Amino acid sequence: MREPTFLVLTALAGGPQHGYAVIEDIAGMTGGRVRLRAGTLYAALDRLRAEGLIEVDREEIVQSRLRRYYRLTGAGEQSLTAETARLRTQATIAERRLRARRIQLGGATT
Image (cartoon, rainbow, N blue to C red; front, side, top):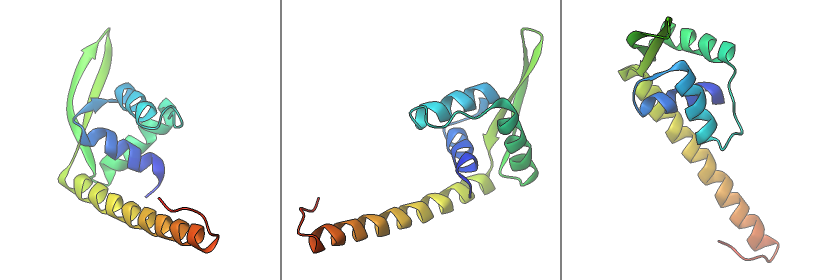
């Protein structure tokens, strides 16, 4: 799973959000490292809807503009859960190797 997909699903795991809120949530989660552009986000939302990972929760009109809220589906939750486990496993391997490297180099471990 690509990082933007992971981040969008993670944002929606907290509850339904509209597009701009997703962009802001992702920026907050990543400390500003990732700032999705609107075009990138809406293309991702369309793709995730087509894949059945998210769905429209509701729509409302705000200042004469349509605001669409999205939510995670059961399939989206399963996909995010699997990806989270995969990333956790990879991080554990990296940490283990870094600790071993420090021991081999005579450094302290944490």
